[in-house]
Image 1: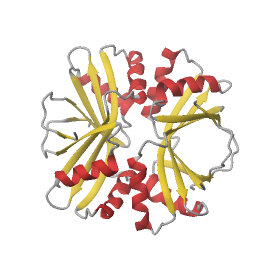
Image 2: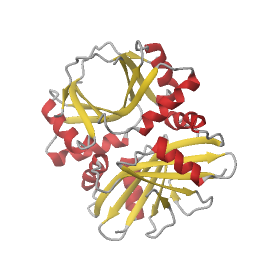
Image 3: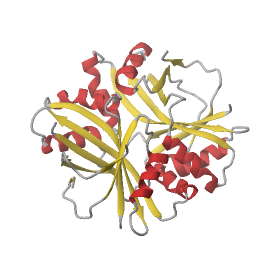
Length: 87
Length: 87
Length: 87
Length: 87
């Protein structure tokens, strides 16, 4: 199914307390080489026909992100990408 | 800065009401060719040294995702990727 | 403005890794008397007329919560409640 | 178990696109008397001893909310409150 992925992250200058909480919890897992954790949203949009990036960008701008505090990016998902998944 | 991206999505069989709300709002924007919207989380982890996928996977498993209801994937972010961004 | 509040929390038996991350970060703040942190959603619905609990419950059931993994509660917000707020 | 509830909402002047998406989806459910939907977070903190509002406020300020864009309130949860729940 053709799919567009929208990534939404708080702008870099905006504090992310939830990411900070994760970062602060890492030493208890023995992790000491992480300098920053930021938590955003990933939205997957499936189109019935050709994935439409302009449409997706409009949807993101109106219903998925607040451009004042967030940045977003839009891309067509590659079907056979090399991401590693949990089993 | 070396960075690992963790994508967390509800498992396909788990209903996502927030994504459903976005999908249901689309006809009012004149969008009628979207069959599904799913909203997950995207987490960016910056390491002080080499990005460590095994570490990131452990962090995801313990602090970022609930493996009973969510799937996650872990990958090293490519510095110069071709994502389109909002201005 | 008449307002209904919908609280949505993961069911108690469902692990909440984001709450766990906050709980794990607390010792670094010197907080050692917290046994659990759970993070859910709070939705405020403003009605143009009388707040309608049945309507709000239907909205929650279809667009705000996944009843398989989440519990929700619906109530009319009291205008002058005694919550303490940040300045 | 003594419990403190922290409610975190975007400040009123900050646009909430996810709430907007829900609001825009309502006419399809036949709901036409809702003027606004805002989606925030509700965090439940359980203390091993007496619930500590000052502690909870400090936790909220550092790990749960971004005071630049969000307001939060802190209160002790009443055990036998009159909220209506889903079955």
